Image (cartoon, rainbow, N blue to C red; front, side, top):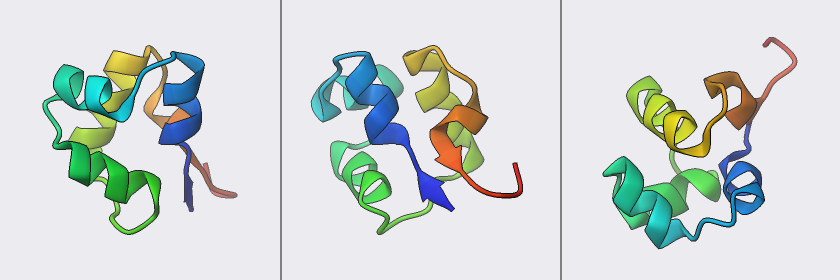
Length: 65
């Protein structure tokens, strides 16, 4: 499964620091999620989707979604 948070964040012209402030998720955690080093929890995906104005399913790519 590929995480697409960077792409969604880029479309909204938000920096990693700005997304961190708006979601309450540490910048380092977001960075690790975007780089595939950490799998986000559903709660985190929900916060990110809310801030980015998209569905949670828009934040990842999977043949099973």
